[in-house]
Length: 144
Image 1 (cartoon, rainbow, N blue to C red):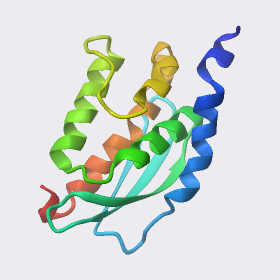
Image 2 (cartoon, rainbow, N blue to C red):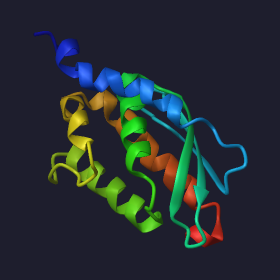
Image 3 (cartoon, rainbow, N blue to C red):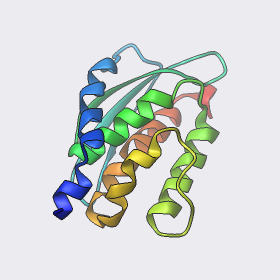
């Protein structure tokens, strides 16, 4: 099996279509963006928040490779109810895992991204949704 076939599993590719369920939300309380320095992929994140600063519903505009799209879908599936500290902890765990310094992050469905770990050029795309969410959450006092 070629490297591309190993990276682009049917499960990973199927995640990209899920992004249609998380359209941009111009009225969202928190908005942020992130760009991958390794591949140039971008995500603009819009977050509807509850009164405690927890994510109620994410919205996204994703311009990324299939890995970045899959990471965004996995983030969006499970972001509801998370606050800034939970997103920051996940982002730190993902960073450590990508560097080979930690276990698979404890985020539901994250194992679907495991084939991309062997491709350092895709690491920035994997981190995009968590980085964009942190940027969004840093723009509102309720979420700090």
